[in-house]
Length: 424
Image 1 (tube, rainbow, N blue to C red):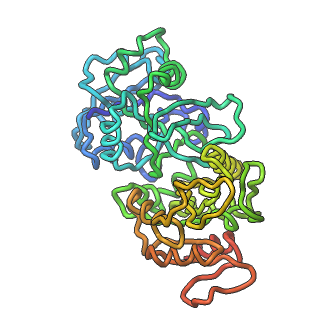
Image 2 (spheres, rainbow, N blue to C red):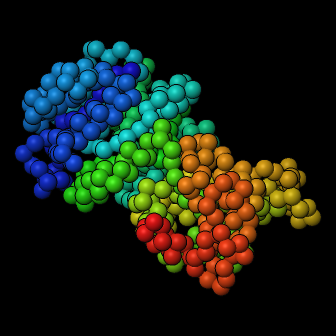
Image 3 (cartoon, helix red, strand yellow):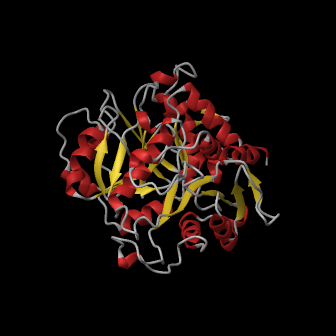
């Protein structure tokens, strides 16, 4: 599969780092951003590359040449006038089929075989790599259905109340068919606003959710953060071909205050310090995955739509403080009967309700998680037993008591645990 890298940006927001070279040529840890990308592509056997250049583009051509010294075949398209983030695509006459499209200002490390397999399975015209980020409040957000089909797109300026933290990461797979179905309407074309968003209603755009490392270098602050992540091995470590480590988190009483089951979004309140703790877990390179029993579904107290809103409220509140979860698994079942309005189809003895380890095992399979180096943190015996049953390191969160099993680590709360984790 061919890869096209859009490397024509001027990088005005990061000019204080290097203003006399193209943004993708800004060095980080001894090599240009673009070289980091090409190394990742080569590891994925994606060596047929087209680079779109513009402002100061000769620097890129001089450095990479035909790509032979980097083990790749590199061609170039030069924009003499800015064509936007997608105008160049209509100028290329050597596209062979579906292709990967990368923003040239991101540091990433991905197992592309997973994304390509997803694209083929969905028979997608477009696949977007999406992920949560630490600043969803000023990012465009993607809305999907239960089949990962993109159904909506919220730009930064669009009104929003509660939202799921899903952001377009700047990695795409596009088909030639999609280009044909999006006739060029003007010379300067914005990929998101002029092509992707207007095509959502056709139902052939899908979102590939990945926790792998994909971050832009748009500001000096983000540049410094990514530099530290490369040096600490976090960037490569989050490639899903590598065994992952995770912190599995209970919800009620661990992330949010628990005064009875939450049945509407406005009753969901973060525990003081829980967002800061999850942010520390994010920065350490652990996957932050919520594992929660939600018997309110089986008991008929909440429907699935309302539960989704409650979880959107959680992600919104976390995002406002720079924290995010990588995924969430919940069990809607409850074996005990006799509740008014209960839903019989969910009144079963399942494999996912804690203390059974089903949700943890499902997450481990999905994300290639090493359970022996991962933690299950919660405030209830069922959380601890679920962690033990899954082979995780159990963490009991309680200000009042220690867990009866001395092999279980006990902390006063999630923040104390996160601070301990930093020292490990």
